[in-house]
Length: 361
Image 1 (tube, one colour):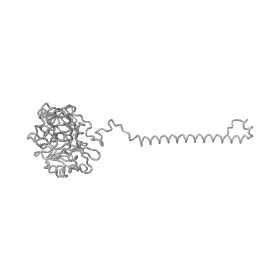
Image 2 (cartoon, rainbow, N blue to C red):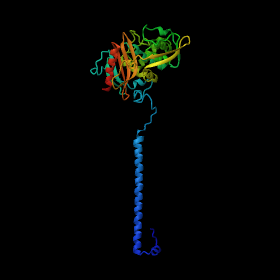
Image 3 (cartoon, rainbow, N blue to C red):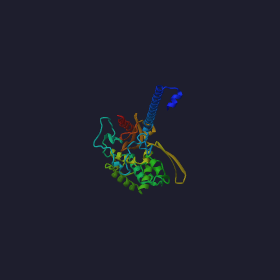
Image 4 (cartoon, rainbow, N blue to C red):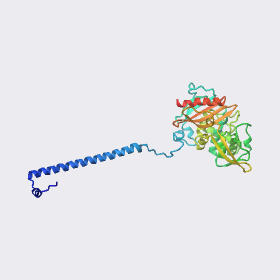
C-alpha cells in the first residue's frame, strides 16, 4: 500500500495514528526487501565465484603448454630429460655419468669382462666393472659408424655398391648386398645397424670418407672429440684387429652422442627393416633385414618393469658376446646398459638381465 498524504488518509478513512502505523509498516517492508535483495545478490556473487574456482581448479589447473606434445624427449612418450639442453656437437659434455672406480659390484656378480649400467636422467652410474679397460668391441663399433654417417652423410643419397663390400671376413654377418646394387645411404645404414651388415658398413665408409681409411680417420677424430680416450678404430664394422679397441665408458660416450639423432633412435628401436632397391641390371630387389637383438627376436625377455628400447649387438671370437642397450623403466626413465665380452650369447643375455634388474631396486 502506498500512502503519501493526508488526502489519501482522509479518503481512506484512517485516523492519523492508524495512518502513521501503516507508514511505519510500509517503511519496514521496504527495508526488509532491500536486505533480501542484497542477500540474494551476495549469494549470486558467491555462486559465481565458486563456479569459477571449480572450473579453474578442476579443469584448467591441468592445462600445460607443450611445444611438442609427442616429442621423444617427453618422459613417458620418449626419452625423458636425457636430451634436454643438448647440442648435437658439444652437448655430450654438459651432462654425463661420472665413473672413478668399480661401482656396486656386490649387488650383481657378472662373469663378463666389463659392464656398466647408467641412469641417463640422473647422470648416475648404478653399476660399473672395468669400464676403462680397452677391449675389442666387435659390431658395437657400428654405433660410431652410424654416428659419423649421420653427422656427415645425406641419407637420401643413392649409393652404388662397390667391391669394398666384399673386403670382409668370410662368414661374418652381412646384408647380402652385391656389387652394382644401388641403395640409399639410409637403407645401408639401417641394414648395417639392424642386420649388423659388415658389407653395408664398408660401402658406407667408402662413400662417406672417400675411402675406408678416410672414414676410419673420421671415426677416430669423433672419438677424440667425445673424450673417448680408450678408443681406437681401424675399420667401420668391428671385425678383429689388434689395434681396434674401445671401453665400456667410451661406448657410453659414443652411444650418448648418437642418441642426439632421431634417426639413430628409430634404428635401434626396430625389429626389422624392409628395403627395396635395384641390382646392377636395374632389376628390383626386395629384402627384410631382421634384428640381431634377442630381446627383439623373442629369444630373451627383459626383467619385469623394464622395457628394452633397443641397441647394438656384437660378437666375434676375440670380443666374445657384446651388447650396448638402452632400456626404460615403467615411468619412461632411460638407462644405458653395456656388456663387453661375455663368453657366449646365453650368458650375455642372462647377465644383461641381472644388470637391468638393478633399474627397479
